Image (cartoon, rainbow, N blue to C red):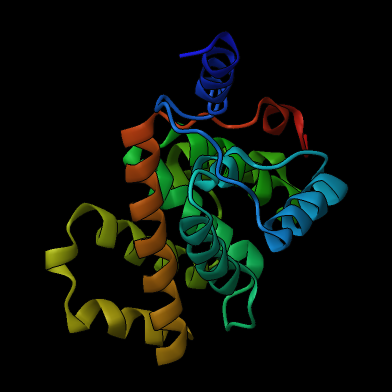
Length: 201
């Protein structure tokens, strides 16, 4: 192997340094991904590490970001804040450092209440939540702890709290997605961008 090739290999090995613990080089970015990352830089000042973690494979990154954006940003009976609250409550159960930091910031920002973000990250039961949101988080956490125990009674409680069946689908989808991403973050030792720690405080 030439000196130049060795240097290139060493450089690629550092691609994921500070992002994940796996030695995966970045794939060549498609024009769409370049535009997406430029938009992240413009809006928040950096590209979230979760996107960089998937950037070793453009097809995987596209699938992940498409589904994430649909779940978290598309029209829903759940507000954006409520979807972020689910992500943090689930991540708290799974002790996911990445998601607690990144999505805890989103709860602080969307609610305008740093204390709420901290309470949901540590113990959502400590927060003075309306019955609707308490029922939503109770369901998401039960899905995380003991999904086999979900029964019609649990869905009935959500309906009593004012959720439609489509809303229940969305609660389940968001909770399921974050259970998956929490496990991928653990498997790869995914690290949050340090900027999140100081944001929205």
